[in-house]
View 1 (cartoon, rainbow, N blue to C red):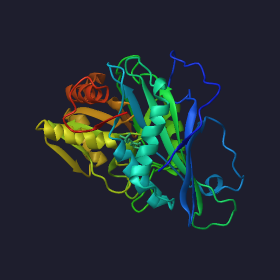
View 2 (cartoon, rainbow, N blue to C red):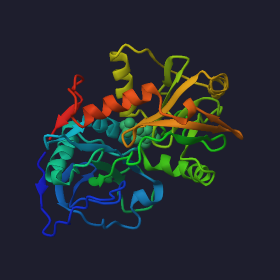
View 3 (cartoon, protein in one colour):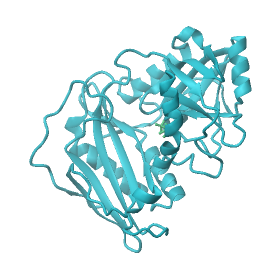
Length: 352
Ligand SMILES: *Cc1c(COP(=O)(O)O)cnc(C)c1O
């Protein structure tokens, strides 16, 4: 795939303080267009700019949008690397297939990501825990209101230098278990990384925030009996010495951090069980003190210890509101690989 590169004539000054998350954007963006019959064309890296879209574009009316999230890391020798980008490429294509958007040949999407990071590599921050967050996304772009299969689409990648998720240390979060709204159902779009899943989650998220919780933990959409995942993270726990995580049932997002943690734990000789976990089992473990650790995992936070769970009017404290041993070990091991502080025995790193 040929990528035409047009560099900006007005590079921005690179902000290094108070980066936060997803607020500052780099100088360029990757763009590519799709038309049924013609396929993907006009791959280009151009100066960052607003989009000019027809008000009838599919994405505005019928929500045809999918995305990915990954980071570019600065190693101590100054080079730049990515963590398992091919996994993001494959998941993006699985999401596209579910939403009726066109897929992109794996090698083309991967080279788009790598080329784009090469152009923006000076934007990868140098501070502890900082990274360049990459956001590939795709949307339907047909310019009419009829509900039809998608004939036109756009694929873009934008990038945002982001601060350390744990600038103030790894503090356990408080999570509310949502017993009204559901995020996804079997046969629905739960396993796709699509904007629509987030739209469906907003109301419960707002309710949780008002009550002083960081995020919600979702229950399954049929019986509201089995736990699924939290906001933008999968969940894992250690009950009575055993590490368990909800199995991928079709309504849970198959996280790359989740997958990596399972592979990592197994390589270290831990037993990890993927199965259905009922809310009753969780509450029993919390009441009997067998819930040793509970954590979320995702690209943004890597791992996020959960210190409090709230369900039907009761608050349960986990591990005295402190990060657990396994959670800390996972955080250290994964971040050491991602930032190149340790040897990558798994072949997860792609250097730019
Ligand atoms: C992206 C995402 C995750 C985490 O996936 P990673 O690949 O580990 O970043 C988990 N749940 C949802 C709903 C997500 O969108």
